[in-house]
Length: 416
Image 1 (cartoon, rainbow, N blue to C red):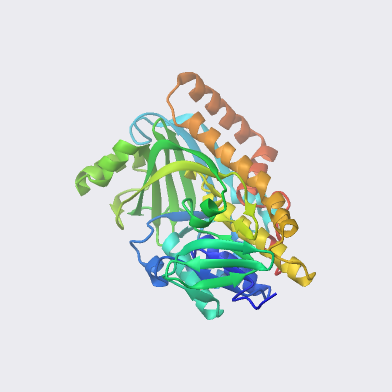
Image 2: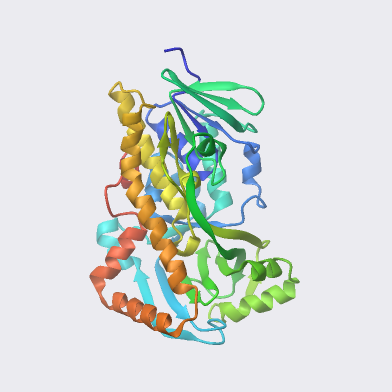
């Protein structure tokens, strides 16, 4: 076998791809990142206006691979989550339903080692911390450089870039997102559909302290989430029909603020915008397979889900942890890391979790994004029942925190 440029080439230097590169590097595996964007472009405030809810297990992985310290100043602990079935037109005017569900980190502190329910971090801060750590660890990054084609032989895989360069490795990973070149080139189809909704995302600063409480109101048009950030700010994820979301994007600042306050309410005092407004279309995309000859999919290349439960990035970080562990163990055992048997271990580990979560989130969207009186009553009674059953509440909190199931070492905070 001829010399390769790296052990693993990762197409896509987003949050999942860079996490995988650092996880592999922590185990002594040589990774190489390629991305069509200039690497510093991802650090611009205008690149990605979203914030992500990070499970405590995902944050343990970042600590284990050397990113935790850089992210800590930007990570807002989520101490409580209050889920309410709001009445039209929103919490401020219609008032909340008497049916609600409250999660409190204190209930699981004994098993989570004092971790919160999760952390809220702006994506731009996550990208910046990951990028700095990638450069500090000496991981090679080729950017801008986009994947164009993949040739697979018994000896390895050759990735051709759009600038004509050819790179070889035993294994190539697609972390390119939903429309990645490599998944399509490998003949891996996807299953999915549009929800006819868009997420309106904005950051606001509040008058009264949020105290680390995340609020999610289920309104007929979709969920409206108030997610606490550092410096007494909050990330708003406001789901509307695609047409209404575009109208909000183009609305005058005064009109947008008036619409916002109808849904936000006054319990946190005066609210002022603290950044631009972003609109993201919402859809489901699930790859039919996670692997192909000498190719593995992670992150949005494998699954793109509705943000209703705030778990999209966490699924990708689980992929990275599982694949890094499979690759590291295979190398230590002298196995071919791109062989079918090796990659199938990764696929078996992640397949059920990815599919079951995607279908569960899809079910939540259909259950909660409507104003059917019978469904409203059923979901309200269900939330109230779970709220009264402590073991059920604790299970859902551990599940959301990534503390349930066969966890990779990194998600337990254990080095590879």
